[in-house]
Structure formats: structure tokens, C-alpha cells
Length: 152
Length: 231
Image 1 (cartoon, helix red, strand yellow):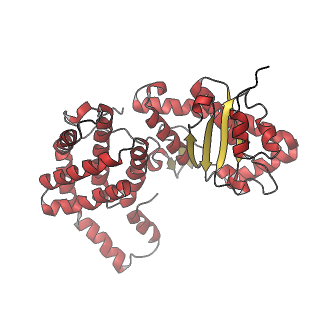
Image 2 (cartoon, chains in turn cyan, green; image 1 turned 135 degrees about the horizontal axis):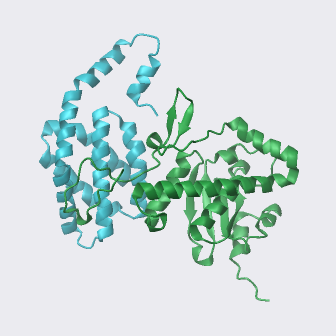
Image 3 (cartoon, chains in turn red, orange; image 1 turned 180 degrees about the horizontal axis):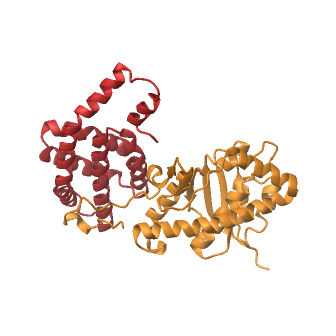
């Protein structure tokens, strides 16, 4: 499926872009350096953020099995990576198709809701600790979108 | 080659350039089309075939015209062959992707991939009900099946023999037993989903006759779950 952005270019096949389309394109491009900057930080900080979240989770829920922690680690990595890509490309659909549908199923299958309520709280705090407020606002909507889809 | 970034207990660091394995059948990654050549391929490079609705309709009505009652058998056998190939490819794809034999794949992961594979191929939403597994019976539900949606309207019984054949072989290969599937409800007849009961060929040998005689899904299930009378 084409992203909203690609869709716009398809629709403008043999005509000029409308003023609002052009300004949408412009803001997408103007926002690129900042998004790329945040993307890089996420890539660099992924390891400490995910490790710290898992450690804190283990402390809060000492009874979690190695298998659940493993799954949780995989999910956090997926969450961060897909969110980062969705942010970079400004493509929410990507998040839905590649991540949410898949995770929803696993969360249900393994009964992870209560674990993830805590894991998300910790992880959101980790994001705050590792990103400046101006950077956080870029990635947060995507993380929250997944959180809402999985927990409510 | 894809490797897993698995490191238990979250103490290790994660290589940002190593993929985390998840949904192999993500539609945007799995389905690849080339506009120039008109080819449709899977991410592994296997050719995929698009079945236009008109073709499916044509298969149903052509088979009925040519073979009458035997159409069911033909469809079921086609489904069997299809299922065999599909299972082989599914097993190959997943074991390559996760780098372990299918048998060693976690059940949850396996089932999720199955559901996603079904969906990405456009065959609907499949769910497996394990409630009766200890009694040797599985119930499979498929919603939004294109095969049911295109069933000619004059049929008054479930006609998903293609899917039944496919499911039968599929689960036979998976379990190593000779299983068959009988469809008990159909979306084409107004049911919420297409239900299939699966069991060994001996226990289900009269299954189609039960459905023919108008038994409901629950009645078929009940008959199947009855302890076999000892003679």
C-alpha cells in the first residue's frame, strides 16, 4: 500500500501540485534534517534504553519468565525501530501494518497486557531520560499510538 | 542473511543493523510486484499467482457443469495438492527466516505466521480452536474467505472443498497423521465464519454425509466427539 505521501504524488499524475499539497511536501522536506537527527539518536540509544527498561521491569516483576523477558525485549526493539522509521517517513500506516497487527496478536496470545502496562510506563520514562524535549515530541506520538492500540 | 538479535535477559547490547525477526509475511515486504514484467513474487522470489474473481467463479461453475457431483472431489483433491505445496513452501520460508526447522519454532510464533500467511495471501482470517485437541478434533474458522464469497448462490451446503482439502493436507503434514477437514458452516450461507472440523480420516469418513443431511456445526461436532461404540 502506498503511503499518504506517495498517494499524493500518484494523484497529481498529470497536473501541478495544489498549493496545500506543495506546502505539505515542503514541510515534509524541511522537517527531514530534524527527523533524521532524532532517528540517529534513537539508533544510538536503543541499546541502553531497552536494557534499562528490561532491568527495571525485572525488578518490578521478579516473577517474569526468561521467555516473557525475551519476547518483551524483541517487542521493545521492534517498537522502537518501526516507530523510528514511521517517524522518519511520516508514515503511520507503516506502523500499523508492520508492527501493531503483529504485536496485538502476541500480546493477546501470551497474555502480556499487565506486563506491558508496566513496561510502557518504564519505557516512556527512558525515552524522556534519553531525549531532549524537542526530540521526544517527534517520536512520542508513534510510541503512544502503539501503546494505545495494545493496551486499551 | 537474516539473523536474530536475541540476547536473553536484556543485558547485552543490540546491534542496530541486525533485524529483529517478526512478521515474515508483512504484506508490504512479502508481496513484490514488478510492473515492467507483470510478475508477482514473494520476498523469496517464488512466483505468486493472482486469482481473479472471474476465474474462481469460472472454476466453480465449469467444474459443476463438467463433472456434476464429482466437482467436490476434484476441488478437494486440488486443495490437497495445493496444501501440500503450500505447506512445503511455508516450512521452507519460515525455517530459512528463523534459522531453525519448523518443528523447533515456538507454537505461538508458528500460529501467528500461519494467520498472517493466510491473510497476506488473501485467503481470509484464520483462527484455530484447540478446545477439543485432546479428543483429537480441531476446529478451524476462516472469516472473509474469498472462496466462500464467490460460491455460486444456488448451493445450499458449504462448498469450500478447496479449502477443506488444503486444510486437511496442511494439518496432516503438520501432525504426521492422516487428517481430513469437513466444512460445517459457510459465509456463503449467511454464517459468521466458515467453520471446518478436522479429525482423522476414519473418524470423519461420514462427515460430508452428516453435512449433506443438514446437521449443524454443533451437531457434527457432537457426533464426532461421541465416544466410539465398542463392538
